[in-house]
Length: 116
Image 1: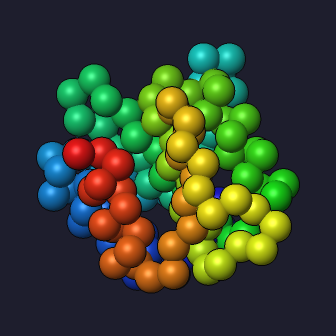
Image 2: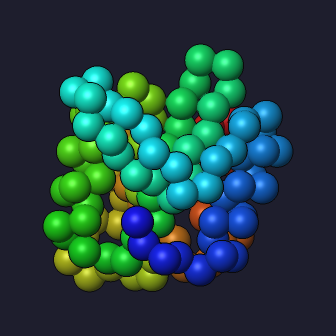
C-alpha cells in the first residue's frame, strides 16, 4: 500500500462513514481465490463491500488494482493522485472504477457521487 497523505485517507473515511459505511484503514480483503489483497480503505454497509486504493499515476499499479477487482467480491475504486499523462482520466467498469483527483475534497465528492 502507498503511504498516502493522511488528508486523502481522512477525506475518504469521513465520506464513507457519512454514507453509513463501517470503515477500516489499511485493511486486507480475502479474494475469491484465497489471496489477500491490501487496500487503503475497506468499507462495508450491510452486504455492500467497497475497497479504495489511492495511488500515484502508474500504468502497472492501475493494472494490478484492476486485477484485484476481479478477485474481490465488491467494488474497487482507484483514485489516481494528480493529472496522469499515460492513463485514462477515468474508467468506469461494473466493479472497478478508476479516476484522477487533485484534492482530498475532490476524492470525497467523487466517491459520494459514485456510491449514491
